[in-house]
Length: 274
Picture 1: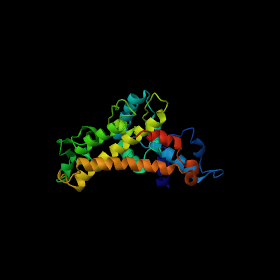
Picture 2: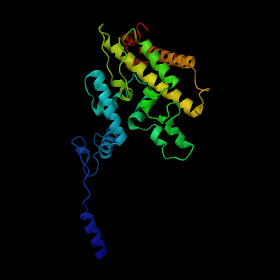
Picture 3: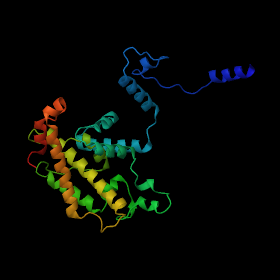
Picture 4: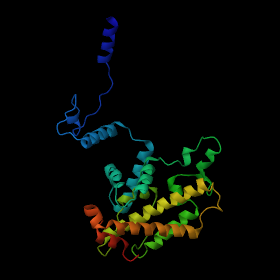
């Protein structure tokens, strides 16, 4: 009896902090759950909101979100909120596999650089770029590396859009991770098409650099002789852009996609003159 009383007292004196209940979730926080009007979708949304508020942000995530805000502000003149950054990853202008690449990039989830530091050989050798002898990160891979794929692809992207854009933008890793939020202006009232074009070209170019880099480092084991030539890289870049054009054309089919079909005028405005 005394032991039971002691345990009960310990429970009632527990000083652990209570979970924060927001105005949006307080109606669901009562003991028991009211099933009247509840749907599985609404319940799942509330659970995700509660868990998101209880989960502390990762250090790398905070750093990359800050980079995105800085880059988008530099291009647009306005700083996006964190909700806008995460929501932009669902943009229809971004392919699903590219969304995953951006999402992992913001969270610092790519296995590069410091991920391999401290590992035994031969894994520790993957921490450094063999071409530049410096620790790899996304900024280095996409913008600073001396690799053939980086220099070739960004040159192609700049030349491809030169007739529509007077000056290629100042990009960094924050620009890539926040590319679905970037905006571009034009004098012919076709800013929406130009913005969509630049978002697609920038993010597809960055993702292709990443894919070829992974092939060079993992599949070909840093063998420069087996790495893709400049001609092959050029062909793959144009194939990527042509695939996006064909995909856009396919998605304008209103008979098949109905209300989800892409606006035909927007697609024409995006690729006009290219």
